[in-house]
Length: 234
Image 1 (tube, rainbow, N blue to C red):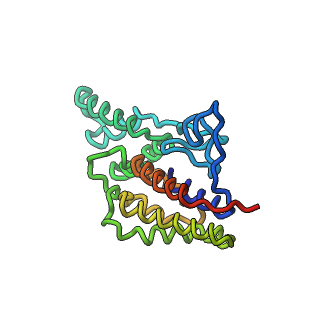
Image 2 (cartoon, helix red, strand yellow):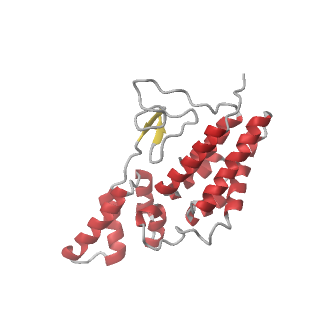
Image 3 (cartoon, rainbow, N blue to C red):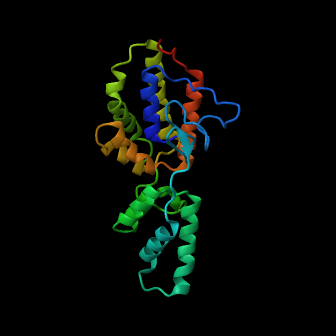
C-alpha cells in the first residue's frame, strides 16, 4: 500500500465506503495480482490498479539502469572485463527490487549517482544512500502526518458522521506509528513535506517508499480497518 493509495483510502472512508466487496469464488481476493482492485483502488504492495485490475507496473530497463550506474562508478572507458561484473550486479539489484519504468526514467534524468540513488533507494540495500535512511530519526514524522492531514482537509471537512471521524483520526495515528516505527526513508518524508497541494502531487512520493516499508504500512492499515469499520452512509 503506497502513501498515495493510503490518502485515497482516507478519502473513500470520508464518504462512508470503507467496506471491501467480497471477491468471487472464481477470482483471487481483492488486491491480489490479476484480481479486482479494492474499493479504494488499492492493491497489494508492488502492484498498481489499472482499469480496476491489480497488475505489476511496467518494469524499468534494468540493463540501461545498470549501465548508467556502472558509468558513475567506473567512468565511460573502463575495460569490458572490469565493467561487466559491475553491470551484472546492478542489473540483478534492479530486477530484485522490481524497479518500475517510472523509476527507470528517473535514473535516466539523474545528473549524478547521488541523484540516481534517490530514484529507488531500496535498490541499494546495505549502501549508504544519501537521504534514504531514517533521516535524523522519527522527529519529522509528526510534521509529515500533519502535512498529509492538511492535504486531506477538503475531504475531511465534509465528514459529519462521528464514527467515520474517529476512524479517520485512527488512520492518521497509524500513519505516524508507521513513519516512526517502520523508519520511513528521509527521501519520502522530504518529498511529502515539499509536495504541492493536492493528493495527486503527494502521490508522486510513492517511489521513495521501499517495498518492505509498504508491506508494514499495509499491514498496519488493514489491521486498523478490520477493527474500525464505519457505518456506510445510506
